[in-house]
Image 1 (spheres, rainbow, N blue to C red):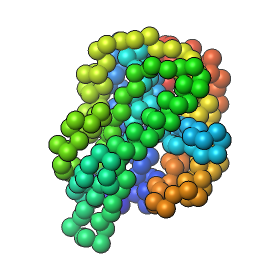
Image 2 (cartoon, rainbow, N blue to C red; image 1 turned 45 degrees about the horizontal axis):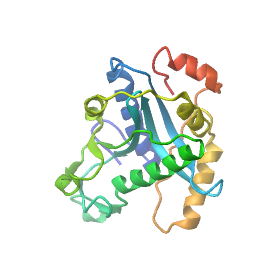
Image 3 (cartoon, rainbow, N blue to C red; image 1 turned 45 degrees about the vertical axis):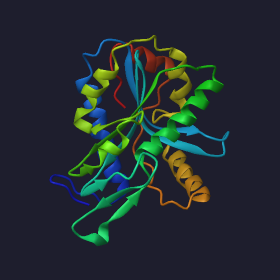
Image 4 (tube, helix red, strand yellow; image 1 turned 90 degrees about the horizontal axis):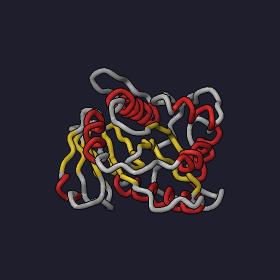
Length: 237
């Protein structure tokens, strides 16, 4: 897969490139946003005890709430059927056309399990915002079909200004939320964890799955050390 400046050999490489772009946008363009803030990437959240997991691309924590991201990096023209229905990616070469599970639906399920997980930790009533961020040379069609759905859809480079719009009403960010999710993030997870997640997906879904993003996690660090560093600014993962 090729765009103007990048060549990709696998879907995982495409996904990682898009997530890296989103990460950089958040890091460099939200530094001036008042309030506590930091980022966790590629979280594997339990959905049925330890039997299954769901993968969240990225979470931005701020004193205004929890921002859950589903990130896509597309080419071609992408047609939105509905919030819940499949989306269709089309090209001039029709043999490359594909259908995808709606990223809006994906993120809805991610948030469902995230809320359940946090509730089990005694953390309820937290403001959680769903954002689908997309990049690449794609053109997105039929956005009006989901205009009343509780989700923000925007290009990756526009994410900071969309977050700024949402982040007007601040609420205290509970340290326990961060501490509860930290062990399920790229700071702790290994490549083996990602591989096991992919295998679990295959066992209970007939839908083709995009492989989990392969990445090298940062050096192991305790949560307390992470929190101290975060309190002085963003933590780069």
